[in-house]
Length: 246
Image: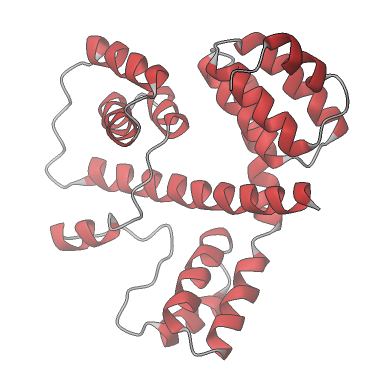
């Protein structure tokens, strides 16, 4: 059933919950009211400063509206909170290990180490969980094509936000590829389809990869870090939904 904009505005200005605010602001974003969404997100965050989903939505809309500095500020706020919660992954890893769930324990431990690369005790524990796997220190560089392929064996994440991050880093081919995956998975996403066409028109020939593979290694490391961020944000969205439903 279609909901009128007047009704949405009435709901928006009568103390809705975090979950309701997120749904309404997402609807307004889909309709292209970017500036209004930015204003309402800011108001919502005055009431709910810990509403991660709303802050993430604000960052995404700021990127779409070209307000890069503001998007950067919001994302820095989110990632700062994420980093403070990193020990939760170590606790989860320990719980999994006690239940003999070594694969799940190793996965949680890797995420913890991504935020605490100097925690040698955690690194040593990871090696006992997966003795055949190499250390996952973020500054380690793969040296062979096989190792590079293994380093790239990450969960495939494709979102418009990730594509725009690539775009703003000047990685146009990666942005184009990400948008193509978004459109492939969500054929009705007209915004992503339109942005994909824009990128296709501006795409320049990709520069050749250096012989020693250094450029490719840098790209893999950036993608790995963004992958970790996306995982954290997904987890925080789940937690935010749980809190909002209480």
